[in-house]
Image (tube, rainbow, N blue to C red; front, side, top):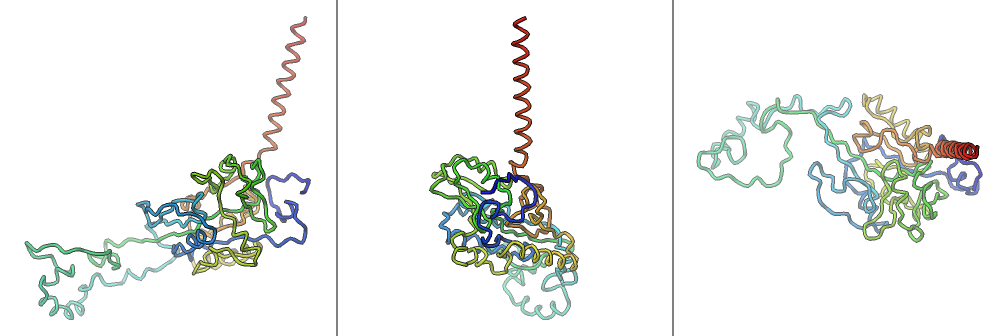
Length: 346
C-alpha cells in the first residue's frame, strides 16, 4: 500500500495507489452511450444470468416500461425509460408533412371507397367511420402502432422522445463504499474496479451510506452488500463483462478507461456537429467530486432526469477537514477544563 493519503482530486494510477505492482493491467471501465440505447434490457438479463443475481419482481411501475426502478441488491444493471414531449436534437420525425389517416387524401379515399361501402359497418369496424347506432363495440385488442394523429388530426401530434440509459455502479476513483468498509470486504482490483467479497462482508451497511450514487445495497434476507463487480471473473479470463457482451447496439462499451474517454470525446463532438447540443458527458471529468468514474455516460439531458446526482462528492473527501475541526474542538474543551480547574483552586 502507498503511504499517501489521497481522498480527492485526479488520480492517474488507481490500482497503483491501492498497492498493486506497476505492471498491473490498465484501468478498465464502461462508457455508456445513451444516444444509441434502445431499452432492450439485454444487459439486465445478461448480468443476472452470469452473476446469479435473483429476480427483483416483474411489476411494471405504471409510468413507463421500467420494471426495476433503480439499482439495488438484486438489480446490478437498471435500464431507465424517460418519456419526454420533445424531439432529440434536430431529429425529424417525418410526420409533419405526412397525411392524416388512411382516408385523408382524395386518392386514398377513392381507392378504398368501394370496399368501405361493402363492409358490414361501412368502415366503422376499421375506425374510419362512426359506428352505426345500436352496433355492439368490438374488442380493440393490442395497442396499435399507428402514427400520432392518424385517427384524429395533425393538430394533436406532439413532439416525443424516449430517453433510455443502462445505469450501473460507477467504480469511482475515490470510492466512498470502499473507504468506510470496516472489514475490508470491499477492495480495489488490479483493473481499478471495486468489488465486494461476500465471504467477508458482515452486513453493517456503512457502504450503503458511503456511496454518493446510492448504488450499493444490502440483499433482503441475506444482509450482505451487493453491487456490480464489472464481471471480475470474466476480466481474469480476458472476457468483456456480460452486459457489454449482450448489448446489441454497443451502447455499453467496455475497455481501457483512457481509450473510452477519447472515444467518448469524439462521440460528443460528432453529436454536437449534428445539432444535438444537449449531449453531455457525465462522470468523465477526473476533477469532479469522486475523481472521475470508471463507468461514465453520454447523456441527452440533465443528470437528474436519469435519476443521477448532478454533482456527486465522495463523503470521505472532507474527512481531513472534519478531523481537524474535531481536534480543535477537543483542544478548546481541554483548555477550558484546565482553566476551570485552576480557577477553582484560587
